[in-house]
Image (cartoon, rainbow, N blue to C red):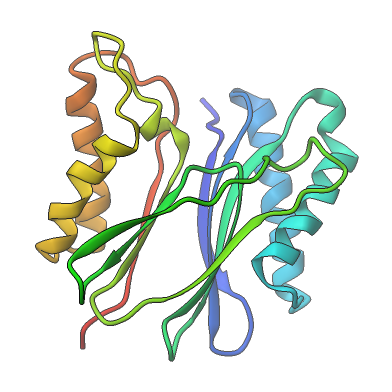
Length: 212
């Protein structure tokens, strides 16, 4: 089965790389079509060394999707981060994806980044929500698709942001490696579901700045 979730990372200019997490509407071939188009547009932007930051990239992707797949009722939620390798500076742009979390190691605090904007492909113009932050040594940025927050238990309760925060904070505090953290978060969501079917694709990306 073709899924609608997508994640990736790639160079985005000198001393910078991009991390992307997306969720196309629908399932099967239609969702795969949208994901394929998003990957192609992002590749073009990367190879063209486009400026404008994540907001500019998301706006261009919105125009491409609106011109090609909107008439089919298709679109995409996307989060895009540009990360400076030397300083740990992050420029984040989102359109439709759930709120991300920033683990601040120095404070021992998990901060929810409450950024919201419409998904891509439906409106002629979208103004992505943006934020700039600094990843200090030991910090983490955690992005994910809505399959986690919308997962329901057998009794119909949603996991929501509270469930993610409760599972994620101790993993970050313990310095659990990023890949293991992502897997543990997915496992915690499955445990919450307690045998209930998974309602949607689930994707987690954990970006960490090393302490070395």
